[in-house]
Amino acid sequence: PVFEELMNHSVIIRERSIPSVGRGPLVLNLVVDPVRSGIVDVMFVTAEIEPLVATGGLGAAAAGLVHALRTAGVDCIPVVPDYGNWPLEDEHCLDLEVPSWVGHARVRTGTCAGLGAVALIDVAGISRPHPYVDPVTGVGWPDNDQRFFAFSRAAAAWAAEVRPKIVHVNDWHAATTLAHLSPDQRTVLSIHNLAHQGWSDRGWLEAFGERAERFEFQGSVNALAGALNCADRIVTVSPRYAEEIHEDHLGMGLAPLIRMRGADVVGILNGIDTEDWNPATDRYLAANYSTFDSAAKAQSQKVVCAELGLSEGPGPLVVCVTRLDFQKGIDQLIDVVHVLSGIPVRVALLGSGDHALEEAAGIVAVGSNATVAFRRGYDRTLAHQLFAAGDFALIPSRFEPCGLTQMQAMRYGTIPIVADVGGLHDTVIDADQFPKLGTGIVMREVSAAGIVDGVHRAARISKSPSRQRAIANRGMARDWSWDGPAQRYTEMYKEVLWPGSF
Image (cartoon, rainbow, N blue to C red; front, top):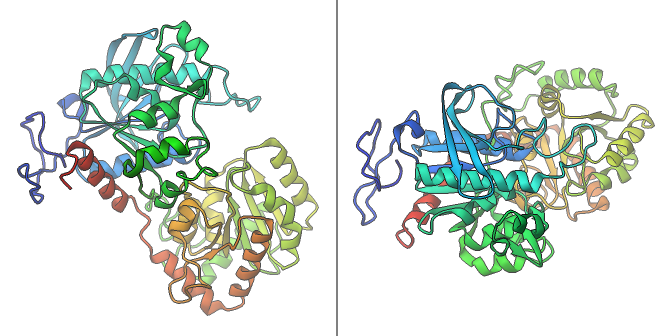
């Protein structure tokens, strides 16, 4: 593996020397099936991973990182709740006794197309048609806390069997795994969104015989707070977000705990799947291209406008592919969309979320005289087509741990208009402030007025085709793959295993 052979494994399928750091040479190990071979560097515990289950950025990020780590030589096994009894190739089952109220779990290991080796943990009550929310009512399952505590308890029990070098847990759903590991187990906690913490009443936990003080925070149970206290390293999904969560106004009540961890909190920017998001090969597009191509964009705009009932002019097309909620600032967009139409620009919005915002977006679109279009839900084909068709992509988030759509947009030559927060700050260079380096428009304030100002600036750019082309091409030239992030995670893992050596 990228790590020293701590367990004296003898089988090395591929190796190369890495500079010694005083502990002997390191080797890279690439094992096809890390569980069956007995070699696991990283147990990657997550509630979501593509292609099995994904409701947002977590599933895509988990899959992207796991694939990239394996390519880099890290033997990594994702561990996921067995929500749907998915079929696996070369399946093996293990009945696991969990030393707690959970009692019994079944672990299925095998491979699945598009992911490779995976472990699925089945605990009674985990399976649902949606991981978190009743798809009929839109309300979260009432026993989510118990379901994910049980999953995490079982994951910790399996870790004792597999003995990975590092247990890497993601968000609150997997966070309580860390409280049940052996004291010498090295651990990493990833925070994809600090707003979701796994709050729960301590009564049910104590009724099952658990020590609630492990997770207690402000008189209740907080899964993420418990993990913040015991993880060896805490990583957020962008450097700027790692800084922001130290501050009370973005720390979501946990800033004091985060400040106590100091240098243990780091930020590593996510990547995107640059094979899937590739305008040169994208099968969903009317015309493919590898650098900014106004003719190809015009063809894609024609397709999108016909699909959405949107006018083909006047003004540039601003697209927004997002979850509809407070974090994403969509309420502010809806408040000023009539102003944007008068600039003039056209707006195409794709997404779902808060029912009131969905209804408001639909009303605005109907009364817009074909200058605003709204499509409820997530349509993969349409998302690709919108990024190819758009002149600009609007991401007006109040806070944004990483953000993927700004990277996807730039990949397609669509210039992002972003709030100056989190991962948006780390990925977009303002073209007005840095004319020769700029890749987008950074809003001057996170507000409805900031949206209007940003779109006005975009409209001015669209009146200079050469400037629009230059900005778009700079964004297209950036490397948004997972290769760089995987290397940084690898270095972090080595620091966790050997503190002070790097």
